[in-house]
Length: 197
Length: 410
Image (cartoon, rainbow over all chains, first blue to last red; front, side, top):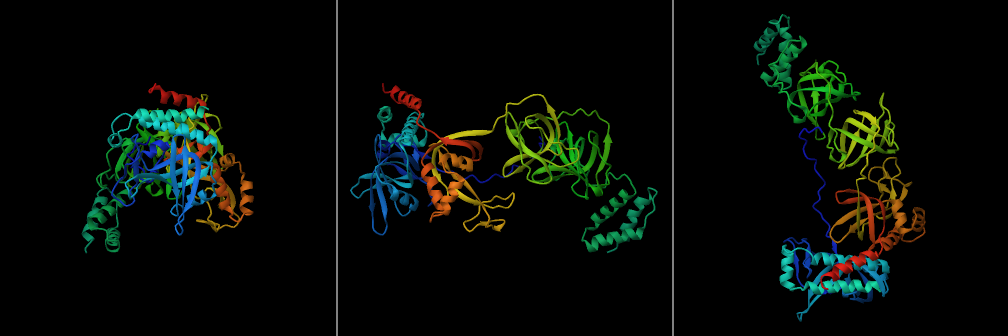
């Protein structure tokens, strides 16, 4: 209203943007091979490239914790398996994730769990590629949350498959994975179909 | 340095207008300015000349460093000397003896605050009349222009038809300075200060804004639920949020109603992180402070406060897989989500070896990794949650997704 050429008020610095946690089914994550760093800096975020064409630094999964194993002597850590309708996630929590490790220590399988974590790609000496999820947190939830997650992950996967062509990540995923979208569509359908029973 | 020549020159200027002056006194003033205050000689001459001309009421157009061209109010830029013509639309009580008048002057392009210094010896202006203000300075206060009327300015009343209709701005588009709105009084809040007459929330179709009205003679409270045309209020900003100070404004009630936008957004997603500082917290008991205390009951402002108040809250990140928001959930909703009252949380903390950590853990077990729907005000990426709840499995969504996934393979 006064319109007197007031200088723009400095805003709070918003350079920090939290990486959203992608929803991805085990069968898709299992196929993931490509990983890269965005930038040269030591603290630059690392990503894995999902076969459906989206980069991902963090994931949110809900499934059944079927097995957990304590490993290591000095550097204690947990390995565990979380199962969704399409397959198995391999998750771990070590001394760099003390909170997740303590949460994991309290949980007895089998249990529905919600996991927030960062996917990492490993290559074994004999050339096999493995992907596991380093937990930021793991909590026991109920079946309702698990069912919500299946809907959520289904919608997110379909959204990725339905993205229009174009974009560096998508093109790269096409080249690296030669994905057949119909297979992922079927995976989604089968996962949803399990909920109907 | 010799000042007698300069003093002579100045005194000649004055005597030529038929006044008598004390040349020795002029020399003394010059010497003082130059020797004692380090003013350059030319500037000292100008200063003393202006002072005398003012004293003897001699018109002195050339003496100022330009009286500034006449400008319309929406073109003012801080730092300029200007001449404006406008109507006084508001006068407020002077906050200090150094200020003789302060208020808002408006022309048909906009409105601006003005201050008249007592030293300016300007004529007293009254509301509703038009004035020609020559050689005023455009100053800046908190990033907003205002007009300073000083001893070098001249103020003259002018005859003009005073039909000025202020342009009303939607609340969401207000910027700091002076603004007019058409809004409904939505809420009336407890006053937090003795001098405050009323505070609360105003809303229109575009959003909501906090308002304040300070105690002052002739000021009356607004009636909640009524729509007002509010002309020339002051728009302030604090922490990135605007508020309206109504003391300068004219508030005219009207019969109509407004479908107010709550300004709220609703977001859904999973709570993927519960931040430290969630659960049971201690707050500073000093009135108006309410800051969170450290574990040692230390308030950053009021130091150790052993008689703190307990509170419950959740700070964390909500995430829908594409976007993230920082949530701030207050006690009432935390109690609803967790099923644990503040009283129960306090007992739990006091009777448990882990203390307040135990409450944090319990809250974490009930909310982390869950799907939530939250409604509230969004500021930057942060949501001050006013309403929230868990979201549950929705069979119609399942049917839609099955169609979507199966549609193209079939």
